[in-house]
Structure formats: structure tokens, C-alpha cells
Length: 269
DNA sequence: AAAAATACCAACCGCGTCCCC
DNA sequence: CGGGGACGCGGTTGGTATTTT
Image (tube, rainbow, N blue to C red; front, side):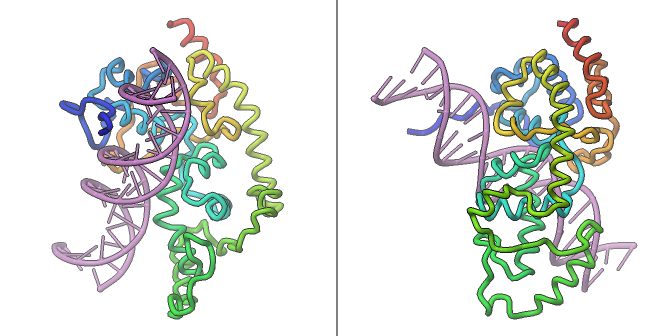
């Protein structure tokens, strides 16, 4: 039996999102929360299917998204997690607050995979490739890769075969340096989480925030700025003009002004 | 300077799972 | 319990940006 399409696609818009659409979706969700994705586009006045709206929100508009390239530490963690979890991108993403599964998946496919291959490791099994497959100029290529890296990869990732049991014990914290960083993040997380909980509660957004990233979600203090983010599909990356309520939320340096915003939102209902 | 190749990433598609009736 | 709707996930595609020739 054939599955019904998630929505009636006749007359629905596809392709890159416009600023106006982003604006509508963002404003709607921030003010109403998400109860049913299927209804979101209708209620928000968008000619998109709910699925598309969900994706856009999760991968681009969510206020807690962390922007910018992956750090070496993050890359190493991805490699380790991938060796344990395989292509379960959402599970992997759950370990990276503010990162999306799509983002991690893209990063894996475009960069990490290549690095592993250059290191003579099979990206799927994380085990050494057959001798004849990498008997060429691996060393040279690695050097080349290092030189052409964008400054964040001064040394190659610490890639080693993962002992499942040991890995489980140490989780993804493999070095003191990493541990410190993670602990720092968790501390930040706890502080911000308190504020964010209030916000989620007031907007009835707890359902989506508490899905798979609930225990690991940190809300980076420098994470969200649509004005700084580049959207290739938009080309010129213009500044966004949000309605006041959204403006105030997007211009946070963190969630410092959250309570005022919440107060506003609550009273505007 | 132009064309070609490569890299990157947002968005789509289809399937599996969950949950409600 | 089974059917069907909605959501979430992972694979893939397509467009744009960047680099190389």
C-alpha cells in the first residue's frame, strides 16, 4: 500500500527559502510554538509543506544553532562517535549541542571522510584500508591536506581503532583538553538551560527541545546571528528585518535578555 | 580572464517508526 | 490489534562558491 504524501504538493513552493519565508516561519514558531508541523505552514501563511518548514527550522532558524566550522576537537569526537554509532547522524548530533544532524552529515561526507581515507582508514569501518588501495602517495596527500587546511587543523586527528567498552567508559572525552572543554560547555549549558527552559515553557516549545538533544543541549552564547550567517541560496546575505518580538530574540548575546523577551511574549498572547 | 573542476551545504525524497484512533 | 497520519532520519541531489588549470 502506497504511502500518502505528507502534504498536498500542488501549489507548494520548493527550493531555497526567502527571507520573507524565514521571517514568517520564525515569527510564527517563536510566538506559537510547534504542535503539528503539518499545520505550521498553513497557520504561518507559507506555501511550503510541513516537512520543509521543519527542516528549515531545525537546520537553519533554530535560535540555539551553533554556527561556524567544526573544531578539531569536534571532528575527533565525530570520528569516534561514528566508529561506535555508524551513520546515525541524529545520535551523533545529540552529542554536539547546537549542531544539526544534517550539518554533521555534510561535514562527514565532505571533509572527514576524505581525511580518514588519506590517513589510510576506511571511513565506514574505521579500520586500515587494504594495502593496495592506499599504496600511493598517502603521506604526500596528508601533507598537502594539512597545508591546505583552514587553520583549524594543525595536527591530524587522533584516529585510533575504538575499543567499544573503553569508549563507553570514557564516552567521547578522550583527552584532558577535551574534557575541560566539554565541562566548560556543560557549565555554560546549565546556566543557559535555566533561562531557556523558561522560554520553552512559555512558548510551549518544550516538546521539540526535549526530543533527542534534551540532555545535551547547550545554548551557545555566540551561536545565533542571522545577519552574520551566510546563506548561499540567498546570495547577497542581506540583513534580516524582523518584527520587534523576533528582533529582540535574535539579537541576543546569549540569552541574557531572555526574561524581558519572555515577559513581552507572554503579555502579547 | 575564462573555463573546468572541485568543494560545500541547503534542501528534497522516501522509508521507518511512533502514536493515536 | 491494525490502519493510517505525522514525524524523524539518512541518503541523495542540485545549486552556488571557490579553486585550479
